[in-house]
Length: 164
Image 1 (cartoon, one colour):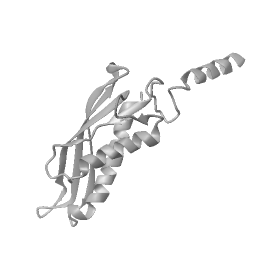
Image 2 (cartoon, rainbow, N blue to C red):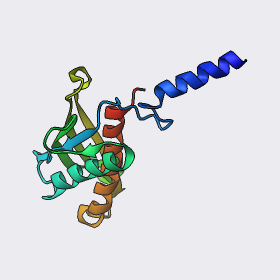
Image 3 (cartoon, rainbow, N blue to C red):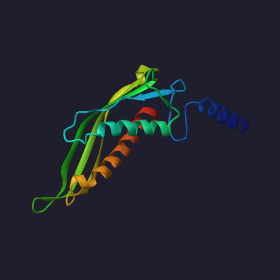
Image 4 (cartoon, rainbow, N blue to C red):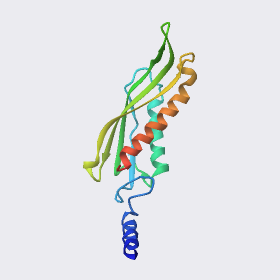
């Protein structure tokens, strides 16, 4: 029994530099990050959406990791392009009407790991927000963009910093 406890303590000490119980796994040699201003290639997107998403990602990393923002020589970098921003009709009803509209935002993210190039990747991240067809987009747009951004930042963060 003592041997098992010693093994557990030793393993805990070994992982203490790069693992937390939240699932975040960041190499101890990675200390800095940079998020480049996103590019907006989507039609009809809010003019400030690219800046908002980049700032949301910076904030997510700043508050949920030990990494420090550095724009001169970062260990890891994120580049993003907004590739889709559109509203579609969902949940058709009799009489050629729909019950819901759906705002979908898709971003193409490039994660560059300057410490370990093999860990870099390019992926698309997408999320949506449904709202009643009786409302127009402008009345729910701020709430929708916030909900979509929150989920996409969580997904991007998890893709970059968890080894599940």
